[in-house]
Length: 258
Image (tube, rainbow, N blue to C red):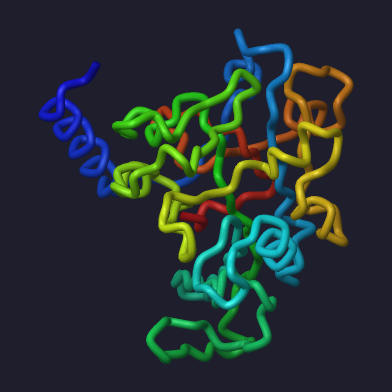
């Protein structure tokens, strides 16, 4: 068992690593990431070309997973990016995009907004984000009580009965996908709607997306449409340089995404 001092030292090392100014996106070789995995390995595919920022996925996730609708936390969210002709990048996600993007202005937070004229915009796009169900999850490594754990099919779960709310996993996640549940006061995050996918259903966000921007599949099934896309397409992952081996893959991910 890891001693308390060793655990704290490890946790600090993980958190310190989050501040490094590293690039967020890199094209990866999925065949390398799939090597040596279980017969069933859940993976997720996000097609940024298809996402319109409607927010249906976010609201569906909140309802399905009992996250208070008005709480400013969510298991999945959508970011809006605007890149100007002079090279500036702006990003926002008001309420996680639960209600879509009804205001053309960029939400800077604390009641501040930035209006960008159409003629100033080089490109604009939306990027859904969620837990990456990492092959090497730092959140599991830093949990002192085993409340966060990875099951054989690759999904990282949180046991609410075991979680003590220390917050180490929240600090240790380089993707910022974890938060404290406002009711249960324990660590919370996306789990691919594990209660649904293990019964042959789709994740709530996948079901809710009217444009097919979100898909879930089995990496070990060569005939799975998601696997075929990942293996044959030019896909990328977020923050590959951290060595977490994320299992959420992106089509059309732009270099501005962080």
